[in-house]
Image 1 (cartoon, rainbow, N blue to C red):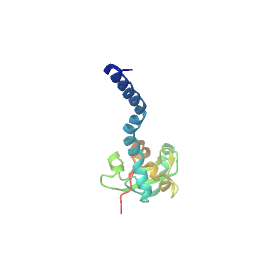
Image 2: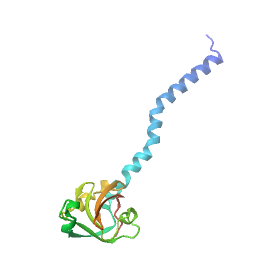
Image 3: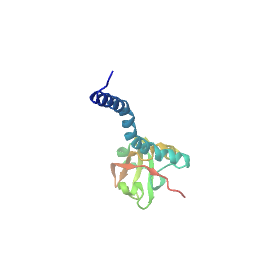
Length: 150
């Protein structure tokens, strides 16, 4: 029994094609892995280092003025008293004197609410900040950053 060169090449070609078909899912996974890692890495590192999400603001509890309560639909908020230079809040356009009312629809009146809200899983995500500015209600999108090291 003799095998021609054409038969050998055809057999090799079929074998290689079969390997490529079997490797396609693996190659697709390898291509998407960096994206998947990039999505989970910052929060995972932050958790490992005990770091939290950060907005780059110093806040003071404040009663919403009576004249603005119908607009704010709440009695209290947190007034921005300081902004970190080039921090997330400053980059998003938040100003000193703004009264923050809620983050992603969650009121931040209670003392620990903001700390709980800024858990490491929020790092890198955009949130909606509802605030009062000069008597008007505004909504600003802001990216939560990693809390800088002290």
